Image (cartoon, helix red, strand yellow):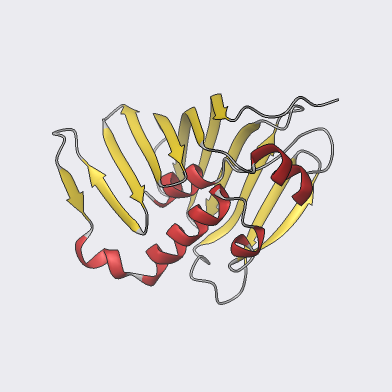
Length: 191
């Protein structure tokens, strides 16, 4: 679930080939009103017999993020404002109960919103950012509520489109491969 939330957020980033920069990030993803993507998620765990693959549809608007797992099991995670809830295969909404007030969950939701709005100071509240060729790496700051991650890496195509996101914890790795991404407004033409 944490990987799903971060993946939803991590689409707000820039480009391969050259060094990813804050300016490039804002130019490519600033002002997005809608973003949709098809994602293949592969999770590997330290004690898992084999990797687990799922297919996901991501839908974003400034007020709502949907992370819909379509295979192998249908499920939907929704962020609306400051709330996170799940919708099961039966279509029924499931609130998170006591977990809803967990400071770690609040930190994750804050991080998701900061990434989607390209709020670099908001992202840097919990992460140190390193910009490199075709990649942006976010490393949790000491004392952050998000120290459960050891690194979050975003990888980009030559046209600044998101290609992959890697989320790492001490015991688990999640690889998100973006197969189709649409955004409104469309990215500006590049020289």
